[in-house]
Amino acid sequence: MDDWQRRVDAVWDEAATRGEDATLAAILALAAERPDDALGMYETAGAYDYAGREAEAEPLYRRALDAGLAEPERTRATIQLASTLRNLDRPEEAVELLRDLLDARPGDPLAADAHAFAALALYDLGL
Image 1 (cartoon, rainbow, N blue to C red):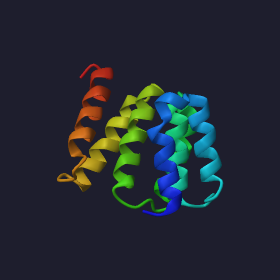
Image 2 (image 1 turned 180 degrees about the horizontal axis):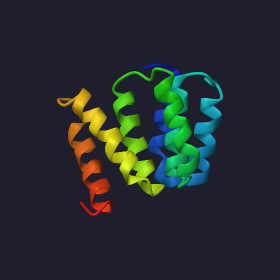
Image 3 (image 1 turned 30 degrees about the horizontal axis):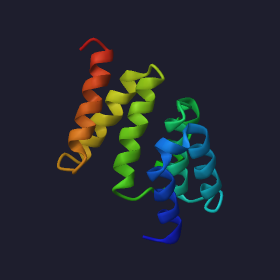
């Protein structure tokens, strides 16, 4: 783990006491050090999500995935994007995204999490 990731992890470790706005500001400052980095985009998306700003998080999750985000963060980002889509009243997209993930990686250690979020999105659809 590099120094940058340690600093990001420290921000998340203190998120509950920092509050949403301070956490977002701290992550934005760290991500500015790596503006074209998939991991930086992913952390920024997560911070916007944490702050309840899902509409701003969505394109950043997509950019991180498109930029080649590596595992295990790639699977986490996909699940978090699906959750964000559900919160943006787009459960159909969330289900499709999670089905694609589970089809591609059925034995992934995060498969249970993907199933849980898929169940929530299916519930939203009345299924």
